[in-house]
Length: 399
Image 1 (cartoon, rainbow, N blue to C red):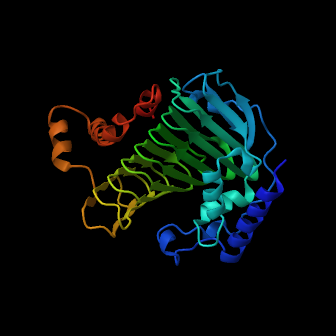
Image 2: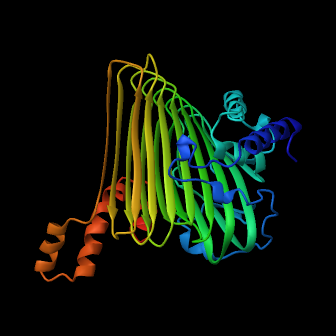
Image 3: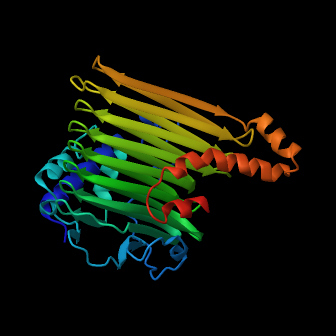
């Protein structure tokens, strides 16, 4: 049962969302991806009752899995490991005082819409904690599987807490039933890395082609912690993926990379905000997109350097390939700097496949379709090669 204190925060977030309404293109952060079409969608719809789903099995990368089926925790096959604890989230007492304060702050008016929407309506909560100086060798996979022919909503919240010197790898997988994808899913991941902690985290989205997926990841890093995050989306009618990273301690490092590969009429919007709040921190954002049909890719990446965050090193790039004349990309790389001793850069490219490279391959007897696929694969390879979680790279190469 959810505690009264947590319920009060949920109600506060629900009121904020109701008063502000669903963001439209008039809101700067949603300039290219209005959520107005979701204003008709009742977020308190009952979850689809069907369980014992099987279509997610082909996306299983490890025996250590946590599975949510239609919004309900259905499996937890994590083997007992020293330093690893899993618990449900129904009270603020289950997270640290620092995370409680952050969580309460995120419930205030003016905070990101998706984070508040998730807090208002989440029905499933989980806390994954790694104890001080403990290392979990095998990757942990969290699978969210959804199947519904009638309109359904799915809200979940996951806390990942690594104490000082701890390390682990997490694979977050979303799978929609191709035959029953009339749903809205909204999942918020809250991450806290103590001093010297290291987390490798991959998110893969195979959402239903008619589904809506709203995702948020918020990371707070202490001194000398390291966070590596890869984001891969392959389908979904409308996907909005938000990443908020705060480097709070000296020497913290964050690497964010992503790849969207779409056709049809899908929309994927990656919205990233990295805040350097301490000196001597580094951040690296590298996102790519491959778009065919009438698909639409959106990238907004911001590096914020706060006053006093000297010796910051921030890098950002966004590169895209359009495989059709009807696909499109909107990109907004941004720098907001309030310190004078920093190294920050950003860049964006968008275009068709290299005609000279395509001609070169065809001249050597390679059919056009195969030549195009080779160039597309090579373009995506850089992002996939940067994934260092056992089994994840091989899985992504076969998508």
